[in-house]
Length: 133
Image (cartoon, rainbow, N blue to C red; front, side):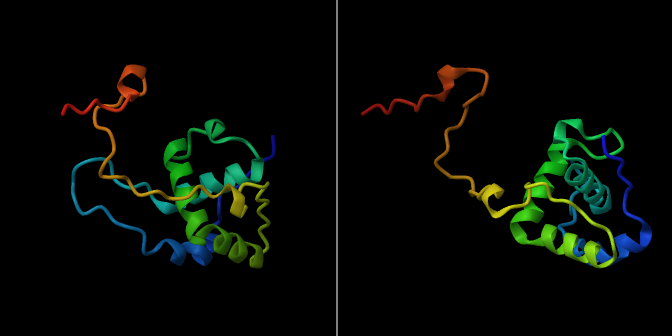
């Protein structure tokens, strides 16, 4: 496996402004939003090593969190700008085919007509409800 070094302070200073306008939690309930620097390091680890999200070392935030933020950053251009800025500072990040336009999943807003009570573990609940006349 390829060795990976987290961002140095001077590298983080180059890209930090890309994440300054990320939403902040206004409520005190739920988990606090993971700091961008930790997620950036996790994303760079995946891109640099070529390993999957499930192989993410425990020192990073959860794989689903990192993957979700990766998808957000990829779709809004933040990821490519971050890679460009880091490359200008001498840090090469291999995207290993993960950040191509073809791999961007379209963001589909949730539908108001979605089925309520559908559970992945129960195929019977996947069927559309029968409307009574």
